[in-house]
Amino acid sequence: MNSPEKFIPTQEKGEQLAQAAEKQSEALRSRLEKLGEDQAENRREAAQEALLDATTEAKSGTHEDATEASFSKETAAVRRITRAEKETAYKETLRKVRSEMRPTEKAFSKVIHNPFVEKTSEIAGKTLFRPNAILAAGISAFILSGITYILARHFGYPLSGFETIAALLLGFMLGILYDFLKVMLTGRKAE
Image (cartoon, rainbow, N blue to C red; front, side, top):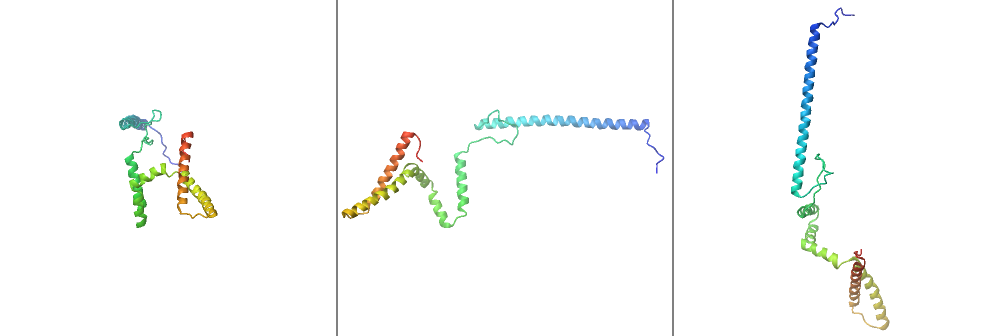
């Protein structure tokens, strides 16, 4: 069924449409201008934040290469971990691990993680108790004790028990001498 009324734009309706279109375009123009101002302000704020970050990094002594500098906050600045931070993290880790231990294990952990015991162990490990020295001590004790026992038995001499200890000490000194000569000749630690 066709409607007898037809939409025929009159001059009055045309003027109304033109005014509405002008209002819409004015509103759109103002939105675009405001958006442009907001973007400019956002750029200014980002630049100010970057300047503030750079100033803070310069004062703290850490800085990134200028080519790597970025205005985004997603890139983290490279910083050095201090001794106090390492100590705090170490103590926190020990606390967490000890919370899962039995009382006897906790007591043993407290003894071996005492700063004096740790430093002594570290120094001894780097100087006296080298792997080559211990290996040489074990091998020489086995070989020299065996030879001494065979010779003493063959010739009828009694053994006192000091022979194995002397062989250990001799092998240990030979191992340390080997490490020392290796470092002196090659400039590298023996591994």
